[in-house]
Length: 275
Image 1 (cartoon, rainbow, N blue to C red):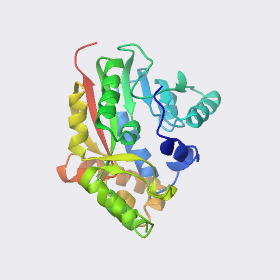
Image 2 (cartoon, rainbow, N blue to C red):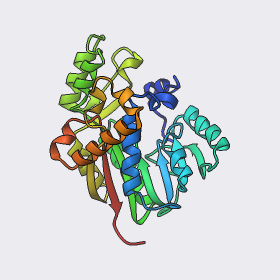
Image 3 (cartoon, rainbow, N blue to C red):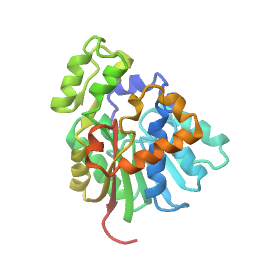
């Protein structure tokens, strides 16, 4: 396995990822991603490879829904957390193991669907992102589906401003770098400024999927600007208001301007051929 960037490993060894999407404000990322997956994945019991699946935030609910999910992650802590959670789950994961998105240990055509909901934005080098997408395409069966996430470079300025982070040392220069190059480096190791990453132009993400031999079906915003709304966490804990927010985001997801106001973007793409 190719060694993980030590700054990325150090950040995720802090253990924050396991509870990140349980934060009420951040839960819109999880809710929308699951909504999109539910509408686009082949029906259960399809086989799913969750690359960079972390502690299993998506893998475990998909397994509970009847999917046969294999989780792969380069962070040992994440694999252990996913394994521990799987042991007590009514529907466990098919497997959880260490691995790198760029060199998958699986045979060609092994899965009905492949998720890349984190690896691409931790691969600043375009050749590494191409390898990850090419590997995802390789392990898909013909006609199988990939869902890959990118972070939008056009959102971070507003998130930093809303969260009061622009006053942190190096923050303004970091955001300026996002807009010019897409590359993110945490200048002083402050975990509030995340870790080594790459921020896509949304259409660049689709182009990278196509360059890996995948047929792009759609390009979707995840949260839109919802996280910036004051009180969004409380709204999402109210069932009726949560459903209203998700309904509005579905109505907006195919509007071109929506891609410029979202933190995460998902490309849904298929391997050519028929099963």
